[in-house]
Length: 548
Image 1: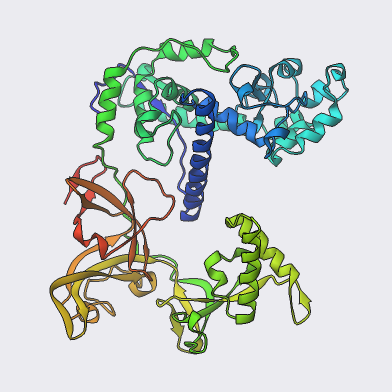
Image 2: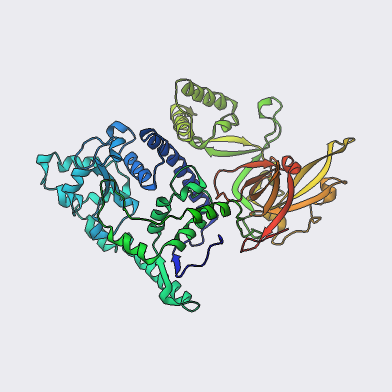
């Protein structure tokens, strides 16, 4: 894949990635985006403490565990000793990563079993659970009192709190332990994969590489920097898989043996091993990363959810309320889930004014109106007011603009909106208004096909309600785009490959993202805008060959 000579051994990193639903994938993408933003803040703090030095993945993990102790830095105390832990202590050896349930007894190196603690307190705890080490006040003379430890542990996430209980090890052993189950699954997958590969190559030259080792090698060779100005894994870029494959290809048995011997941690919690200089190969990898094309499986299925479950009420234009022009539907929504913009679309003008004034008052008093802050303020508004003497407004009606909603013939006061869309046909039409066309000037317009309109089959471009005549008599067909299709756009002298991630029918827009980006924040681009730099739709084979 990256133009390197084949290694003497076949190295495989086994990663389980079962098929996930779109909702799960979107949730994971949002979590990754949130995690990446948090890591950027941590990296900034680290750089300020270390004269611009880049943090490693381990440094960022320490900071994340440290933040977990308390939202307030002043209250970030060692769970065992109760002593304050400052940011500087994370990196000068005074504080270190601690396994809540001892690693030697659980083999659990997962995040749920980790915290940060004062180095001396960690040594006192030793190879015991927190309950075994402190429950009988064995070390009260050192300031480690069990009631205080248990109280501090309550601030931890739920998946960590139970590890301070008396029966923590029994619970862990009863379930077989998360890591034990994981090791069993991975061992099974390893055996099956090795058996498969042994049919096509010498099985004595097949080595399975643990994921934790590839992560360490990535960091020590500073390969993460190839995708960003930091030395931690960039999961928002699909090319991180290529870097993993590169590391696996360069990891041999001697490296595995060297790491396995480095069981004792030093003051900085790192494994120290000598690594070969891979600068020439790293340069090759860097050059190839900029030219690699990602191969996506296009989503051309016409079978999907036709309509959203929410039923909308149909409303007519309210000429007495000019602020509500353009809205054609009404629905009910939880008041705490309203966006800032939706406050201005509350159906009842009286409640609209009251809610708007309440939020503005909070804003002027210094309340931060991010998603959580706004939800809290609106919930307070609901409890502070009443409708017909019934306290606590939980839901409220808001107006919606959705021209794609379908009115039910048997119930003309009710409408349903299409759940999602299969594809979009892009047409070029004359620019201007009827009878006042601008000669030689054109604009692009998208005609979106919903699952309901497709009825289980891919439509022809002149089928049904969407055809040349319905768009414009002089319309010229440009292309049809499905989700995960790739297109080439011209940016100055460069050609950029973008992926179609979704559609916005109301605004005649397409969610276009860089081909390397994983699913994340939507980036809608007007179809009419990219007519000036659109080159063509392309297909990419599984091995990265571009086809027009």
